[in-house]
Amino acid sequence: MARQLTFDLAGDPAHARSDFLVAGANRLALATLDAPETWPQGRMLLIGEAGAGKTHLASFWAVEQDAERIPARLLLPEMTDALAFDGGALVVEDAHRVGGFPEAEQALFHLWNLCHARDCKLLLTARTPPRDWGLGLPDLRSRMDAMPQIRIDAPDETLLAAVLVKLCADRQLPVPSAVIDWLVLRMDRDLGLARKLVEALDQAAMSDQKPVSRRLASELLDKLATADA
Image (cartoon, rainbow, N blue to C red; front, side):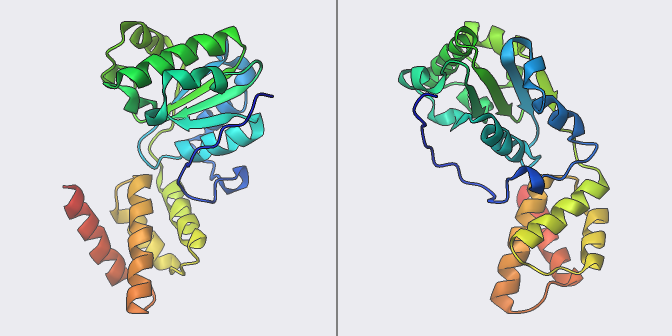
């Protein structure tokens, strides 16, 4: 295998396959990533909103495939030869961020071609379809538009509840099940919001030295909703 490149990829540390919560919203995406040999020309674009689980999926897929990982915003043309190696695998995260940045667009275009030439699997993640990326390089835009796609759907109530429980457990934050049930019925089905809410609950609980209550959860949920409005 070619030399391993290391990048600073911040995120939730609990990103093993065993930590991934499988539900109707993500089952097809997981099955697709588990069968890279079926991807057309060895390429796949994973689409989902912020917090939907793209990073988690890409993280354990990269470990299992011995793949390089790099955020799209860090791409430069001179990196591409080292990233795409014969018979290897590569993950480019948040590919929607390359739009409007000529060097990053050129680098992604080079990677597309190199991965094909070197039989290197290519997994991209993005929040939106390529038509919304604002790509300026016509050749890249045409290739991204033709790339096979799989989407992580919005979570159902069962998955949202499980994610809230997992996020609290990751922080060793005790939250009564009644509070979780109350939140699931009132908050948007948005895993990014769930992450922000649990972080806010943890900070408030540590600051006040008090357990998490329904009243606290309600206050913080209202604050987050107001901030996003």
